[in-house]
Amino acid sequence: MMWNIATLARAILVLGAIAFGAISFGAITFGAMVGRSHAQDMPNLKDPTMISAGHALFLEKQCAHCHGEDGAGGVNLTRRVLDAKGVFVSIADGREKNGIRMPAWREVLSDQEIWQATAYVLSICQSKHE
Image 1: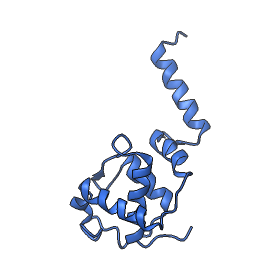
Image 2: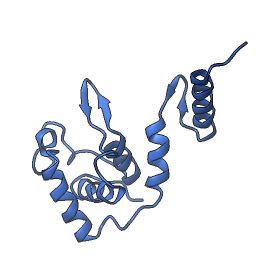
Image 3: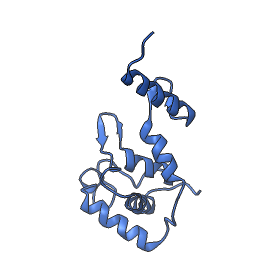
């Protein structure tokens, strides 16, 4: 059997995803694999400076369009129980649920900015104690 470069590249990506636990029975979640590695370097998310910077990003990047200015909008964050790493990955890689799509911000925001947004979201939600 002859393998072309594209087939080899796909095989390498799949094997790498398996090695890092990013395959979920038929779905390759490369973003979550990358997000997990960045999410392990967690800063102090209760720092008022982090929360304030995150709120500014929340407003600047139009997050309030779906979540409301205070997070209690249509896609309500204030009534959810969220954890820091899950929020980081959702902001970084985006998500889709019930036909509503949140865009990925990894190519737009730095990890520091994603952590700032995470700090703000955790400050307004019912966060898990980690």
